[in-house]
Image 1: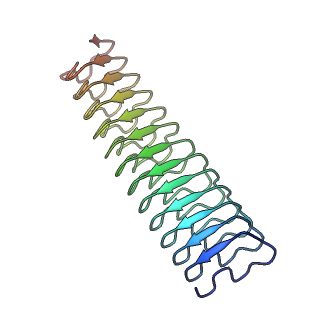
Image 2: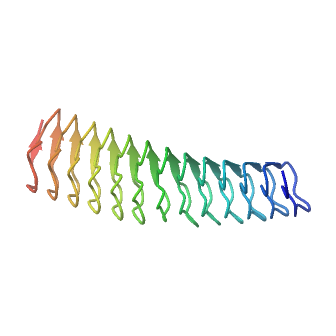
Image 3: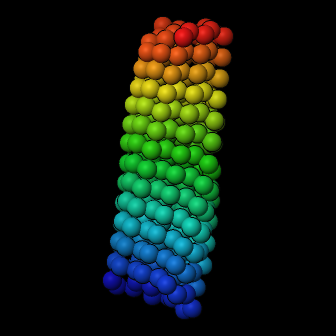
Length: 220
């Protein structure tokens, strides 16, 4: 394609397919760029895979990143060891490391390291929350700054914004939770109405489902 690998000088083992793909690369090795302006700005970063329109477009020196999908990891510059698959996944990530985003809009607004999101819109609103894991459509999709949450299941913890250190497994678990922390919910709709309650354990379908802001309760 036009201007693909245009500035390459000493780099080797690179593949560029598409207009402006890997255009700025000088001595970065081991790249695969497929799509318009994929990995456009990279100069010395190594082992990059960008597939899709503007995938990894802003990467300059970041290593070991994989981006598949339109604008996937678009803003990444020096971040390393990130994997993003899906339209807009990890789109605003710049210098952060060790993030995995699989699905459309997953971790789109993320600006920190060590988050994992799998499923449509999982962790899409996350900005500075770290060490979160969300698996399932719209799991933890409202989370912004909370840390160390684990949500597995459709709409699991989908209202949580700042509540931290929660574990929710099952569809709609801790679904209404906003600021509650240190809760464990396992089973469909377990602790489903909890909003600000802390240190609760609900095991089983609908366990503690009506609890809203009560603390230190256990239902098995």
